[in-house]
Image 1 (cartoon, rainbow over the protein chains, first blue to last red):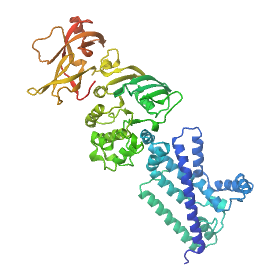
Image 2: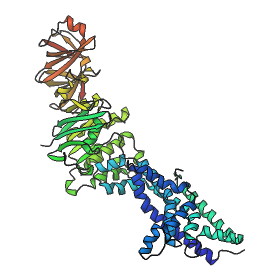
Image 3: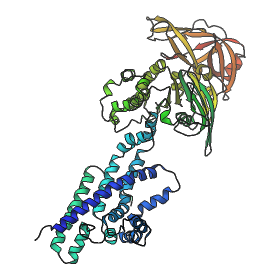
Image 4: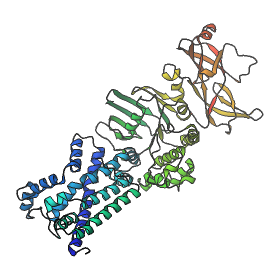
Length: 227
Length: 361
């Protein structure tokens, strides 16, 4: 029985890179978005909430299909990127990151939003009466109190990105070293009947997912995702 | 001279708030009224936690006008909420220091050591988890935290309401102490008359979003035309000075311009001003000074107002001495039999006096 091939290692490395970049971007996007959703009474709030939750219910292929059209040579995004001399983003690592960010957005936004909502207004009001300005209140009160939410969001976003398949296949294809992540690599192995090699990767994924979730539950966090 | 002038108007659904009042430059002003009268909303407006139309002047500084609104964190105020609301992620010491660190060093008039001593916080300082404190301890820390921003105005929203009786008794002496020591105006929201009578110097009586009456505590609390006159514990407040200690019988003699009152022993030196509360239901009226009686305190008084209290009783307001007032609640039958009239000179027999130690009117 063979062990991991250089191709496999490349796929693992690419997967970890994709998940890390995606998670980092997601935290940056999800934090202000979750804050707004938790505190705003704007009429757009319901629409934005629905859009954020959309990837939870859509088949990844649907999402991938539209992203592919958008980023392709004839798509709106594709035309812009071509005009900027970047070329098209489909079948590139950047395109994959964009797809992953959208696909995992609810997994980052919802735990953080729940955490912000659980804090309520009182601690922030108290901080305001103790001379803390808006940004100060956010950093010294809201962020530390929402820490469990951030932890859950980080773990879920990372794990969910590692586990995605449909979106990657639709917009990224199967280019080794560029867009071939572990889930796609497993698919390739199975297609070419290399079950032994598939086991190495698939078993690894099971171990990884189990350890992540175990860590999540042991640290007392719950998967507070509203499905 | 520091003082507060506040004027606010707002509407939220069916609730309309329209108030205007002033407070003296120091001492406690109680916003007193039933739940739903708009006291807390008004306090939040003063703090800037609600953004409503209004004018607010504190200490000659404008905090709010038609064209200007200072955000909460730029108002020099301390706010004590009903629930202590300590930051759960900070230790007791870090909670105390939160606001202190956010004002400029020159503005720090209140020192941490001072507050620790005032509120007896010494043995709580190193507690890492504020939720391990008792309700009373938490509220003491919250009060200390608010004082440490050296505020020009202290706002307290029913700080005792969420506490059990034991904790209330534990905190009250600290509040009374602060009442004497603080040189800033305090606005204290409450719906408990006994708290107000112990702590307030000035009373703003609220009902359904508007101010029914506003004035000194002693004057306002004894008015018969206000809802407070119909309370079971309606009564008058008299400022008196300690004049004599009688160790044989464990009594203390207080004197004021209307005469003297013997009360249970007060451990205060002669000359100290204390606040005595006399409930209307503890006062009876006689036409001649009685001879032998078990009642210690009999004061000469003049009737100035009589109002019905339900169908069976009347409330009687009397003047004793110079500027002091006493209320009596007696049956309407007695009132008729004694042929009591406005202007009549009578004697008030005071069955019991409650003392508010260390409070001056």
